[in-house]
Length: 266
Image (cartoon, rainbow, N blue to C red):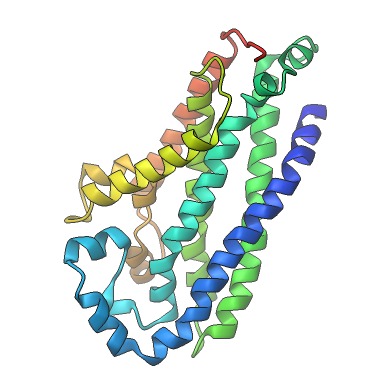
């Protein structure tokens, strides 16, 4: 419990900064919606000039671009990337921090098992992400209501936003698993950015011409198709299972390796 409280306190400031960054990004996109809604035809003609494969990579769907939910589903991917970077950075840094800050010896001589250390740190990271998303959801709901030209479905808006939490949990687990393979990880930012952008681009490229196939399983960003969510008010179960399996495997690998590896102070 002491480890959990300590980690929560140390992550509090970064959580607030990430929440502010995602809110600012969402606010910028939502502030542009009235202009898009007022010139829908011109905006659609502009986007029609993009090749179909490029539109698929960017998540642009011309049929729903005029509605608030359709527009938000198009820009949401950039918010998801921002949240994924936060989660990946958390996952990659939360276990390797002790080596970078030369506190590994101090922590590991305590009468606490390594599994307990991983559990406390993971719970702290999850708590920060959930708190960040709750603030983000609340503020963006207010912003969406302010710019909506007509009434919109709050239920659908929540369904479009929840993938942010799912994607973050997946990248948090990936970050944890990746970090334990390094004996000394001095800078986690390049690793975080490379992994997030690499998986996003790989998924977008493989999935540019088809919405189904094995390519979608390679990138967590492809697990949640906005058009499917808008049309069915739900998620594709097979990809939810794929995400849950990925999280379980990554956490299991993390625990298995961390309890056996030699922890060095840099």
